[in-house]
Image (cartoon, one colour):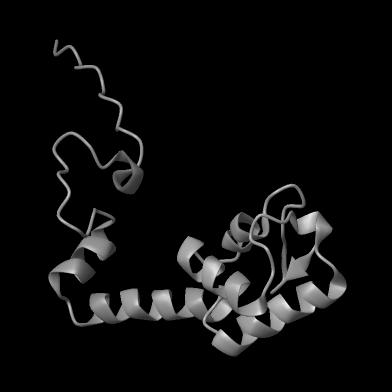
Length: 124
């Protein structure tokens, strides 16, 4: 099992897909890394040699902007939006969708589970 940037890559996946388990690396960036290093993208992670793992790791470190630094950058961007009180910042603060999705019926991921209705009390 290869360990790159503090993440254990799944052994049975191809290198192209395995690299996407690292935060900040998607399919496009994964393909670019694999092509630059010269590794077959269909090769399984378990079949990588130590040299290939080191080459991939070095290439990722050169490009930077993954895992911890990427998470910190996203967190700072959101806090900046909240601080300047723009529309997107207010939506983040309220826990609602920030990109124009409807909230009348959907948006359960951002809003959380539905509130239970309380039964009406009898007045005597």
